[in-house]
Length: 158
Image (cartoon, rainbow, N blue to C red; front, side, top):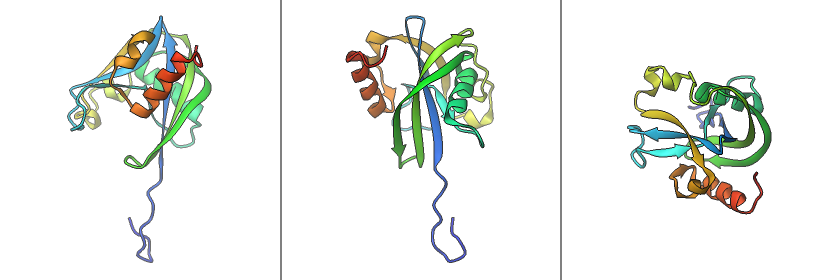
């Protein structure tokens, strides 16, 4: 996009929020399978979350996204990690969250409702993974996975 003087105008940075939720003896992740739009990974796990909506705080966004994806109510406890992705022109904020209530796996967000926008995104499968198995997952983004596993091993997250 160019402005009137012909110089490139920087696209507005997207903000993605994600939750790290201890629940039922493990942690909640989104298992992604048969992902057509990614040539590098067709199957992987990810920290649940999504983009902020206009006027929403990061805490409000993570509450909404987790409700949409998992069907549960959570409370953000603290920000654990933040990273910038030049590739996707976004900032990602990862919150440690407390499970409050709801039946895990009952999310009704657009990724579960045959929204055409998600046709190449594959299947979204909510899963609870035991803490001891997290280090063996292909969990994206890998730099956050590494910090998370290290913090779990060092007792910084309980």
